Image (cartoon, rainbow, N blue to C red; front, side, top):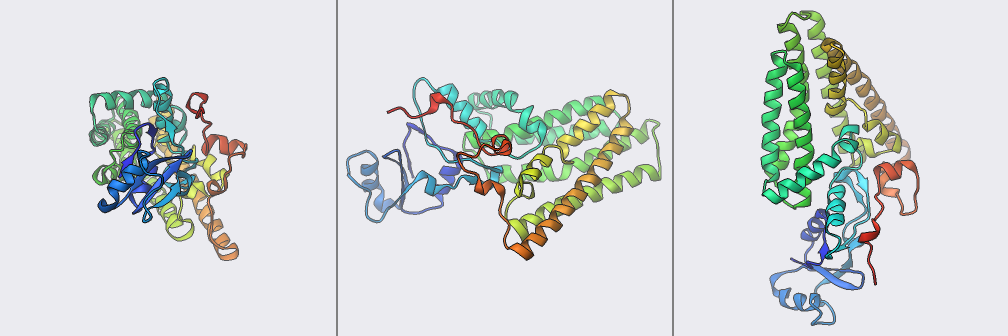
Length: 351
């Protein structure tokens, strides 16, 4: 694989290039990258360096847009692939653009608008110190355990501090992996399993902390646990079923309204907001009940969404994410919020 060092490549471009064989990439009239068998390496390198007029006959030459589509399902957004110039005066702008590009387009309100600025600073620090994404993920796991212990023993304030720190690290590890191209299967697996398992454990530990310190006991709390678990598991199954059987994309990226709902749906971060507000008013039990109620409402919404998707699939054919139809001149608010970034002037090509 060859990559020109005076271009900034996104991870998805490198990933897509690695999946092709005997392919070269051109951008802005110049040869910029290639992935070829060893037997073609010398001739391909000569083409990339300008010592050969064209690529070897066995090498298929593509534009970068043909290599990677604008719709990025992994990050739940639609954004054209860009190869940006690496120049002396645009380092800060490149770092900012690369970091922003590592963010999901459709996500919760905290991750989307609260964490980006501090996360960018921490990602830069981790990069300079050589801290790996897997190390950050491991720290997140330890914070999950510590927060669970604190909730279990009724130390709700300290537990929330560690819980919020964990959610911040959960943002940092993925961004660090993408901007440094250090994704690993183990890190991805550990991150996904942790994200999937720990939220209901936190809520149950919160309830047990209430019981252990003179709070309500018995059926009321056990019923609350059951409601939270059933709603959480049901919601996750609906999300997975939609992707597997109906859309081949995330349920929240089907229509613009679903992307807006994702900002506040009963996932970990919005639920932590509920718990934090309740604790601020001295009502930790009310926080637990709020999580249960919001989980039920959210799962009901997802169930309706799944039914609508099934009806659409049976009556109108395969579903398509609205992000797949976003164009460069689309100025809808949903597009500006969830799907596209404007290119800063300092990163535009000059001729």
